[in-house]
Length: 511
Image 1: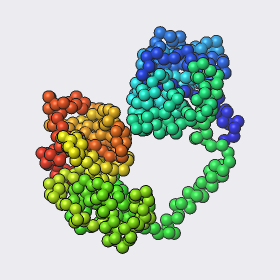
Image 2: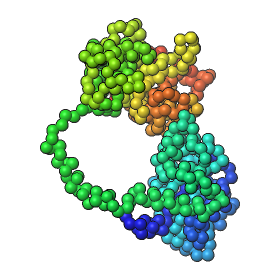
Image 3: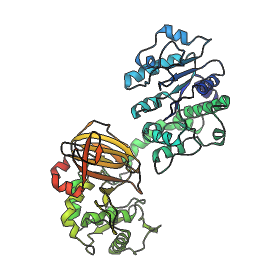
Image 4: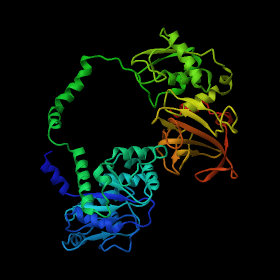
């Protein structure tokens, strides 16, 4: 793309969405000034989907008209009048389905023929589905307001905005521990360049309009690079594609099995827990400590500490013919890619726990679609000098691994400071809750089938590493805990396992 083409694409128009989470007063006048500056002082169009400025509109249509019907030509002619600027207001609205989105998109394309640059205000509370439609329409999402905490929580709950072209108007980034995904999204954005930080968007609309223009052009360039080396690549792409297709026929390679989300992990784990050893092929990034924690847990059903792990690593290295300090790197042993290590049953550790919780251990680790998952903490109703109070069990896993529904139930979601993103499964007598999730794959009230992926393992809330904190409970109208529309009392997940006795066949049905 040439610079002239870039400028032409920008002049074809676009829409910039502003979000002011937690605010009751929307700064309508500064937005009108900005829209005027974006259109070179000719006139402006501001659309308020929040419903907070319903008395300040002057347009012949309401915001809801844009998503409910295709505007008649009479309304379009009036909006295209060269003498007027418009503010479209009304009740809170935004596309809820594909039909409403197509209607909004069509109307905006018609309006942009006469008013190229449009400024719009998002609802103060918005679902991720609505965020998805906003992302499709807008080249830029601007997030501001008075409270950075409210804005951080707003962005954290909207995965579709986390990878959008963002402009963050607060001087500080979101708290990394409380709002990890919002922090990463803002950090990836262009919000902290000196020119942006020094511009007061409410007072200097001309300068801020230039910033918006540059960010819009950057968004265009992401999809349409300037001419240069990329043009050469596009020219050669058909030949490169043919070469890539033909390459496997000339060089036979050995396929290395990776982690699968659908293979029968239960059979594999039953086999590994009985077998005296197993082999693991390292990829050059995985460390022996993690696989050792998994091995000790699978063989002996023990929660490991650092001393146990280091002892097991040294013994394992020596058994495989390597020096006990091989490949050390920051207290981790990271074998080179392709290294095969045999992990044997650690007979020098106690085995008593295996008889009582071995089956439950296998069951709970199979809930996560990571073939190297292990428990890091048991349930403790009361704290002591040896352990803290802990109302569930922790299953360590790779971040992003899917959490599978152990049974058919109704899903309920929540969010709190300690548990982060939470999803609970409720059936007739009991509940199972998963905390610290990364992404939710079900909404409140949806029916879940056994084996469905319901969420992914994450780091939200208070946590030192990716894991699923699993809480089990019995439904009780007098229970002190609540998820969705039911109350429950917490019980030990190991006790829950033996109360409901999930069978291996029932677990396999989830695969």
